[in-house]
View 1 (cartoon, one colour):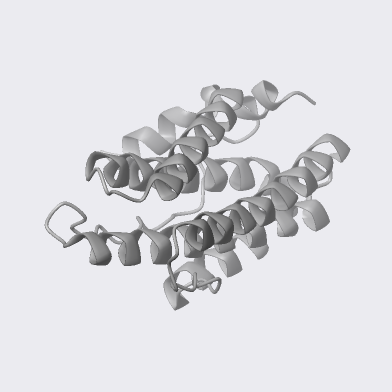
View 2 (spheres, helix red, strand yellow):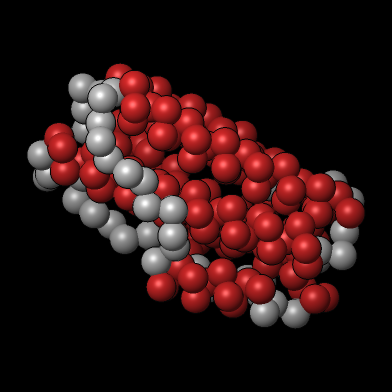
Length: 180
């Protein structure tokens, strides 16, 4: 099954996904901007890892299980890249790899999704999550922090997210409507 065929399965019954907290990155000082960004992006990566691992176990489609395994591994790599960027910048920040209670509730809801509708719920969950992550990275980049390694990380993550969102473009209409 190709990713584009998923949009025909159950497009209007997506699980609700609460929006990521909108912290005021532009109004914060540079150290606070970095703290906020690192905290939010590492938590969102943790949500992605759990969602992809859930899909790798629950999906009835072998292609989606393989995709989910790959994506889960990619988000582990993204967390490692975040740590490397912080280390190279000389930062002592420690990313928070645990989803918030609200985010954990969303993961739990995905895990309880009906088997017949799981694949489309998973892809729509991923798309909404990636739109939130993309928005966060773009807002961080607009703050023009002097931490080049963290800026490179955010740019790389933006490209990664845009690529994967484009794979599932037919399923984005619901996500974009809920983002407005």
